Image (cartoon, rainbow, N blue to C red; front, side, top):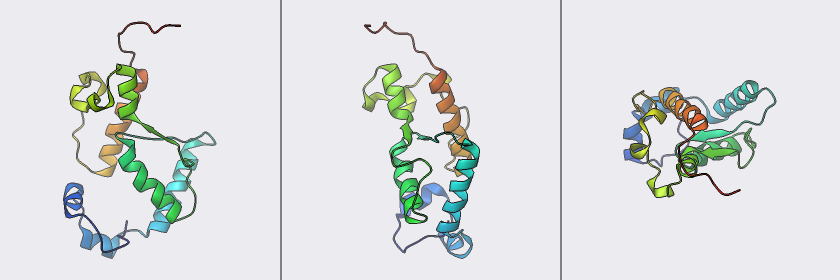
Length: 145
């Protein structure tokens, strides 16, 4: 998307690998991009309640929700339709949130894909993690009834 201000963090831009000057020239207008995204989410969900999932959700959710509201006034996810995979893992593994790091997760939960910081690559990687987390049934003591 086209940047909306002159304020940005050099380190964040470096991690993304994006060319800010090119985005200024060629980036999509945020309102158009958010309208297209909203339509895509609603089409894919076909009337079901969409849920945005990420690891960690707080980082992506703040950006996404703000852009959806600022550039279109609504979110297909509502105001709280996000699921944090870090918290999901912590709850299922019965570990403190601070211990819910990818390096400590069972290898079988993680994607084999490299973490490139490219949006599509990261989305596929996170989808694989979410699927694996939903199917995962860790061994552990039975909880009281």
